[in-house]
Image (cartoon, rainbow, N blue to C red; front, side):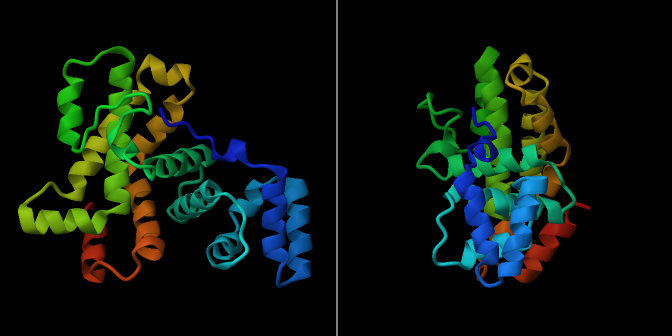
Length: 236
């Protein structure tokens, strides 16, 4: 399964690169960033909106792409009131993993079976047990969050034109998948029970955070602004 590994992969070189980015135009800002790094750790830099802007606009950025995904997710979640580094790490790690060819449709790197719809996962759950049942539940949450978080306009268009399930359907099944997975012994064994339960309990807010990333950075010119507003108020 996908594990939150981005923060653990951060190197001293990555931290120094962040300091250089903040100090490129302002040496005093760079010195303040260096002191913050020493006193409070790299998290204090990753949470700085100026780091996000520099990572997205500076031509000489050499920070690994997963770190950029982490910063985008972390700051979008903070904006929505979710201040949990493990949740940010897991969601960002999921986005990086699902960005690889075909991974969004497979429950693990070792399983070649593909599931292109939530109904496929539900059907497979009927006869699954043990670790496969756990992986199917996690993937139900992951896939629902991936689709409703990054492709909300696509889902809304399908709902209008073809009567396909609305975003609320993805939210309900996604939260159900994560919650069921969090209650399994497998989640406890790999230390993921708290993270999965947290996302289940705040699925709508996490989805909204990914919508902000999608709207601002991936497809800023697409979609209908009124539809985006209705997308948010429809869950109340």
